Image 1: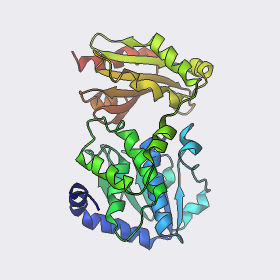
Image 2: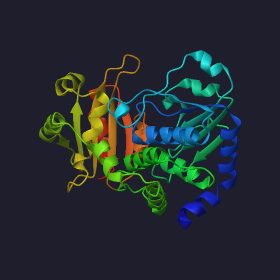
Image 3: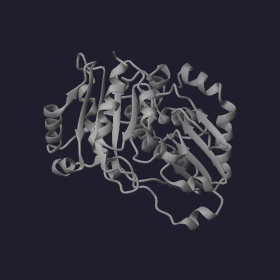
Length: 330
């Protein structure tokens, strides 16, 4: 039985929820998209939704598009689908999850959809969908997707579907520790637990590391810096990534080493991303209390109050970036 909190949230949007269900029923071909460089929430919401549709509408063709993750795929999630442009020439329903703005959508062919739906929890500068579900107060896009699917009472949510959604929620809520975690978040998690998921297995698969990963942790603990007002950060250039046997996407995996340190108010990682199309240093930012999303937006990024991302073109910009964060706590 669903919690009154979940029921009330769904009640306020029952018309939009029914619209989405009607669209899923209408289209025989459905494509689900998410953001570049996917995280737990992007993949969890994408594969949670696709699994639900496949389980309940087995005759439909459902595809998931975007780049694979360097470690989550195939350990936690299936590999993304690959189709040539001709696949998108026929009518299909396009669903975009966990993306604030169009430039971050991993595959631009989402725009070829006959009808576009977006489900998200990021601030949005420009709406690109015919039907949008947006709530920036939610901890994760997977929380929103789960709320929608749980409201479809006549349809089943399998253990596999629930596991994907739970992973997305755990990942973006910081294991239920970020300020975006609410009664609704816990109520959704409880409902997913009723689908017989095994959270001990989920956490092990999400966070188990290899012995070699200790070398990365050791390097960070011996080479981090802290600003005058408590901004901790570490920098890992490309040559060091090679030496430590990690990719630029994995540099941020240790960022929360500083989350419970007295005197540290915000913390971030700098990873050199030698992508010829967009060379930059990618920054993952976290905060205990202050809203750091404004600083992220200033530096070509964005996100949430306590968890955001940004980028700089050169390490020459690092002092200015750190000063902007530092000033929040002066």
